[in-house]
Image (tube, rainbow, N blue to C red; front, side):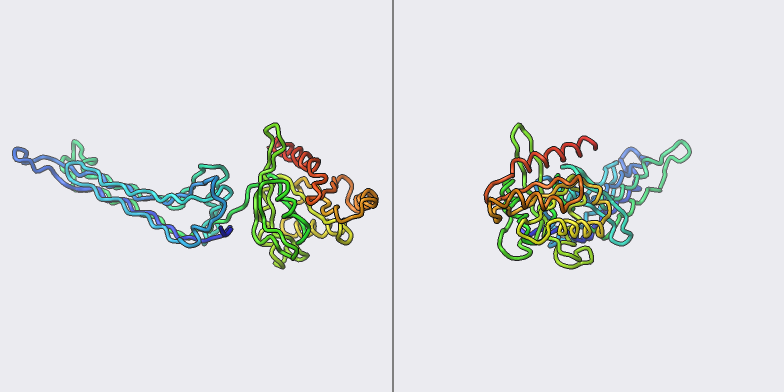
Length: 336
């Protein structure tokens, strides 16, 4: 299934039905009095979060959502039929904005969250509601309320505990597939990851967290180069960032600084997130040089940055990495 994280839709609610201005016409009641019923409510257009969805694909190919109008009231105080609401299911993490004004309409963070995009009009009151001691035969009934219509932009930001950051071919997809049950496409060419993928990492003792892989970032991504800029927004909601830097590349510390600069250019707030470094592909190094290489690589990173050597292929260092990530994730959630 194709991953779609941005779409614009047109929504329109239904008008409320008009109240009725009618009078009873019984055989032995020449002055039966008012008996007009109320109009029915127009249908609303509503977003609802569904944890089983992960893409906005359905809405890309079905962009117009128009609810029906409420039916007018009838005589004998019969209320007009209200129209059904239209409920659009979207993934958790979806943000809705008015396309014209950029007004935030709502964020759907939890399964079952709802946001009304277009409120259906209320039905008008029938003339029976306006009867009084001084007005025994009101001829007036309310019209139904008008409907609402707008263009809405929906944007999906993946909800994951850990977000992976790295250059193309840094080994992110292989690492995700090894740590979790996710099956991202893996190949030896740039931009293997063309769309984000989520995986669940299990540590035992009922401990788990969600990890997200995004397309590789290249220098200049924050200016629109490569694929990474389109998906940088997905890591805005990650609790922890894991920088994946390959051990077979040039100057791991410099690569880390370049990645950090791209995140800062995109959103300085990203630098406030806790982060770790996974020094990947250590299986490509000679065994007798590994310790010296790791020690030298660590000296190129700022103080306080935890650098963990790992190899997804050789299954080395993964348990330690999972524990370190789990501890950071738990610490962040405890502060919420």
